Length: 102
Image 1: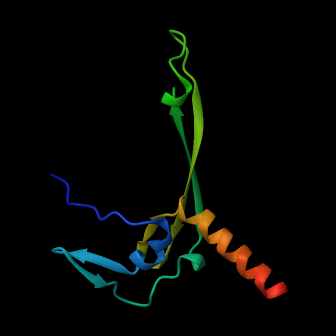
Image 2: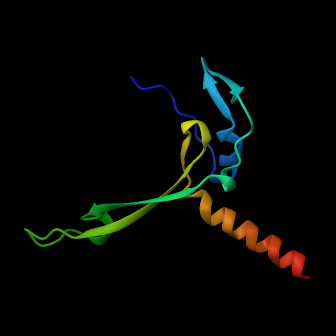
């Protein structure tokens, strides 16, 4: 059986990247704190064929739609999926840029 995976919001992803869980105890990751904004952004496209929201297709028809997933690759081999976090980060940066222009 796979270990339990903690559930958290996309907003708290940068905090969760800096901790590891061993024996149900959260510990700070060794080394410098990871800043996701400084890690290179990577993109992967997957395909979802016959998505359920589109209904049942005609027999023999396969309809595939692209699904883009975003990742950040950080030092030490850490790879984090940031698909849900990236729009939040962009909105925060836009909000900061607007407040500095005033």
